[in-house]
Image (cartoon, rainbow, N blue to C red):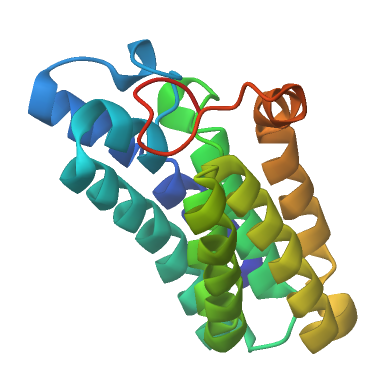
Length: 197
């Protein structure tokens, strides 16, 4: 019962669409009608500026970090429960109850939950993100590379308890399916380009 309550709480907390709320607060417009239509930090940054994009990203990280950290405290580090709570937070951001089942691509919430599960290994994943991002400026490519690497790191560290991470990474890849097509076609836009992602 404790695990189920934590899963439900993580989903609801992570469903709060901070990108939508911040952009509407600043511009009185729906971010879903701008750029790529995504509520995540990259689109908010492009359409609303650096500070708004940074705020969105940090809040999306935090809304997953907090429930997963609580799950680690209550259920135990290295057990399977916190990995399901992690997934609930990712799904909350991707399929928000407040946006009729729609949402972002889940990367910031993926990272937030991972930070609560294993801070040092997640820092390695974040470092890899920037190693890919800086020379290419492809946020999508950097996000997919880092999420995949993080899954392998979690599996290596926690074994079978971490197997749900495969599901959450699969969802991240599924949410990025259009980006993957554009990367293959050579039409994916880079960070600080005005439109896309």
